[in-house]
Structure formats: C-alpha cells, structure tokens
Length: 225
Image 1 (spheres, rainbow, N blue to C red):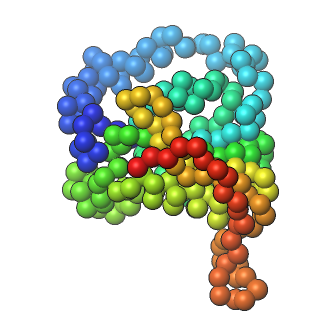
Image 2: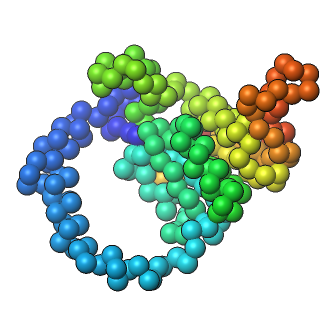
C-alpha cells in the first residue's frame, strides 16, 4: 500500500486521478466493460486448459505482501506464474485471514517456505491509527500501521512461527522491496522451524505459558533500516 511521497502521506494526487477516472466513461466502469467485451464466452473454453497444471507452487513458496499496485513481484522476486502463492493486503501484514490461507497452503498445497514482504513508500509505514482514522473516517479498525519496518517484519514473522503453520524444516523470512531500486533486502531471518508446535490456548507443562515453536535463525547477508 503506497504513496508517491513521504511514508505518512496518502498520495492525494494519485487518489484524485483515480476518483476522476472512475466515472461512467472510464476507471472501474471502463475496465469492467472491457472485460465483458473481451472475456465473454471464454470461460468454458478455458476450463479444460490451464498454463499451470497444479495449484501447488513449484517453489513450495508463499509470499505475503502489500496490495500496492506498483509492486512488480515477478521481476522483484524472480518468479513466474505457478512458482508461488501470493497473498496481498494493506501493508502486507499478518492477520487471522492470512493465517487461514497459509494453513491451507502448507497443509494442502505443499508450501514449505513463507516470505513476508513490505516495501518502501508504504502508506502504513510511518503513520498511526489515529491519523488513518481521521483520513478514512473509520474509527473501529486497527489498520496495522508501523513505525519501523524491522519491528513490523519481526512481529509478523513471529506471528507466523507461533501459529505453528510450517512443519520442521520450514522457512520463514521478512524482507523489504525497494520501489525505487526494484531490489529486495532480507531484514528478518530466514528462520528455520526446528520443532513443530503452536502457541494458543493450550498451556505448557508448567501451566504458565503456551508452547512456542522452536526455531533456528539462519545467517542473513543483508539488512535494512
């Protein structure tokens, strides 16, 4: 989720253009109309033929990232259709629905590596819930903003680990995508799951804390602020 200016700005210039183009002659309406013209009647023909034979990602990889339209994930990650599951939301943050999807990816579609990818110039980076509530006029949502990308990625990686999604040997990492340079820098992990376990309501043997996933940090060659 991004802007064209500072992390705390919400890209009013871009937003105004989007509003101007969303009328009957263009924007959303025009795009849907184009889909109707181009794709009508093709669903049945495409049903029997798919460019990728299976929903299992070829790289056994799932990536959670932001919904920002500027992210070129294929180029940035060096992946193509069929290589990875891509989950997207505002900020690329770990939420209950992300956990739901990742459980399915791992349990049913052979995913063994989970990456969390934030990016520069994100509208959630460097702001807070009070500011976002005033801008959106929505006051009962945690928008999951963050002041430090290192802290947010560390928090999200920890949430994935504590959810007990991956089996032993699985990998989790957090990285930042530079929109300007088109480069990805790993800032958390990769972390390898050494023992299966899930934090939750179940208490540990001492009765005080829920069990946590045993993990081992692997060496990382690059860091970012």
